[in-house]
Amino acid sequence: MKKIRKAVFPVGGLGTRFLPATKTVPKEMLTIVDKPVIQYVVDEARRAGIEHFIFVTGRNKAVIEDYFDSQVELYATLEARGKTQALKQMLTMQPPAGTTSFTRQQEPLGLGHAVWCARDLVGNEPFALLLPDMLMQGPNGEKQGKGCLADMVALYEKAGRGNIIAVQECAPEDAHKYGIVGKGQEVAHGFEITAMVEKPAKGQVPSNLYINGRYILQPEIFSILAGQTRGAGDEIQLTDAMVKLQGKEPFYGYHFKGRTYDCGSKIGFIEANIAFALESADLHDQLEAPLAVALAELRNRGRK
View 1: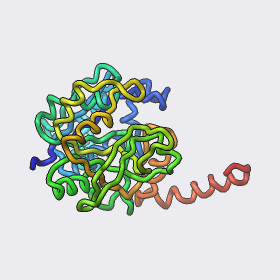
View 2: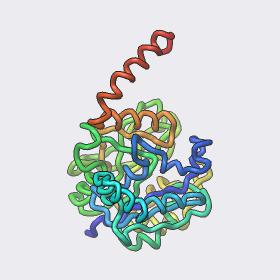
View 3: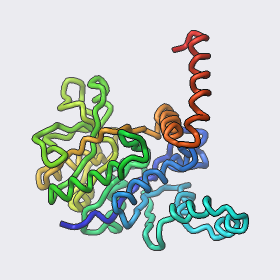
């Protein structure tokens, strides 16, 4: 069994739900408290043992590459001004030399196409896929445990083969909005996946467990994606390719019990900022009172 060393981050999306902010700033660089969304996702991958970070970018995303590069002038300024804690944080967050790769998705043809664009960088080995819009917070707070992907890697190692998909529960009436899986018998701290459907029609939903943006996939997915026809939304859907791969490889589900924030939506982005700020020891006390005041004022104006 090959170790999960590489992770793919599809960051080529246009971020139209956040216009005009994303006209010049990639949505992945919008900040949650004091760090870009993409930094949280990369940190999760590092805690899971990922050694090589592969970014599938698009036009106007060069700032992401610059962000993960060394910034000698900034480091020198911080050192000269005695800002040792900030300097240490910058150096800790920077990936080691030679561990980041960038490739272009030249057409917006969907998640499946973005994954296929990383085929030569991944090579013939299993890999992790992390959607940068989806930000995870553990059941006991962001700082508890190693994170969703680390638990998925542990399940992969116990299963000994196959593919792993992280899932969470959604309201049954919302299941048609997501990729949904069917649940089979338990395996280690996960379960066998019996079905996968991308945005199922109402009344044809196998469960209320939706795919929340974390995957471990075998490299055979690339040959399937190469010939995959367009599906929902006139895009090349990863779920459709995984359904075909399921005929050759087992799929297991990992039920993540924390919170997932869709930072590609305005409400998810705002919720993530509040949740992670409240988890911060130096911000919690400062934020709790203003939030209470703001909620009280809304109620007084008749808004709930």
